[in-house]
Image (cartoon, rainbow, N blue to C red; front, side, top):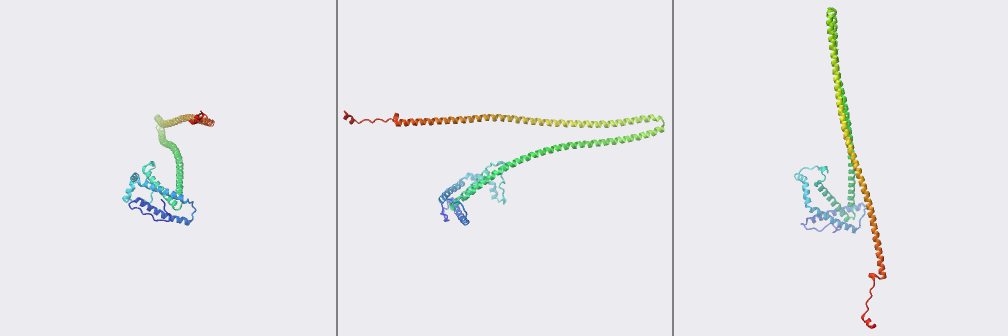
Amino acid sequence: MMFNLEETEFRQPHPEDSFVYNWHSFRSVKVEKSVRRLSVVKSAKFEIEVVPFLQSNLFATIMEDIIVQLRILAECDNALHIFKTHAEMPSLRAAKYGIVRPEVEDELEGIDPKNLGKESYKLDKLATDRVFLNEVIESTYLDLAMDGIFKPLSDAIDEINERRERLNYLAEEDVRHKAKKREVMRNLRQQRNRIRSAIYENDIIIDRLRNKIEDASLNKEVQIRYVDHWQQARTEQHVLNIYNKESGPSDGITSYRRKAEEEQRVHAEVELITNILINETLTKVENFMQQYDKDIEAVDLKIQIKRHEYEAQLEERLAMEVKFAAHDVELQAWKKFKVEREEARLYRLKMIEAAIAVQAWWRGLLVRLQIGPFKQKRKPAAKGAKKKKK
């Protein structure tokens, strides 16, 4: 069913036939737009490859049938409409109650990247593809019917190819970005390990400095106390010397005894200080030994873990080598089997062709010599002829 380019009025369908009425109204609007587009194309004098009139009309007729079938398919799929309505219920409810929608909506809003196989996404994709296919077929139909060209179809194909190339480029970029992300994460882990090592070393240095400060403060207190006692002892010594000189030899014994006691006290203080220093040194040595034991245990644990990982990788590699060797043997056997099968097939084919040639030669020989099943039968003589001979 075709229409003339110059005719813009069509038969008015029955009012009850809503589908036919909508279809003819759609056609009339499309024809007016195509006539205006044809005038613009002719005025611009574009050089476009035009299909012959008969072929363009045949293609347009096929496009028209496709458009009707697509419209019937879209209008008659009630189950899909119901399912799509259920999926779009939030947006329909928002439109019913007058909820203000943003002027600019993001296409990716409401899409869960972890659940891309959702039925609502598939329905939206199906609806978008149907709309795009209808637009392409309708535009191609009108251009074929009016101008004899199929530029919308070629533009749609170019657009699909560009979109496919864009998707491939985005997939490559995604892979490249993931590789960069893995590299950055690896560098981040290495940097974190270096920072932890530096923090650990700084903590050790801080502990050493703190211990030195505590030791210095303690040594200072001991030295101050020693100096005080020494001054006190020297004062007492001078006082005793004066007293001995004044009191005579009787008090000398007492002074010497007191002096010995003071010296004994000083030696006791020095011994106490020495013991304190020795105990602190022993405590440090014990702490260092405990830390050394912990570090050795951690290093041994890491060595064992690495050794287990190495053994697992070695076992896996050996298993893969055995598997690859078995696979190589199977592959060689399969290649040998294919070669032998092909040789057997060629031999059978050659024997069959030889048998056919021999049979054809023998059959031709029988036909030419008129022997065997091809031997000519003699016709029986007539009865009247036999009587005449007698």
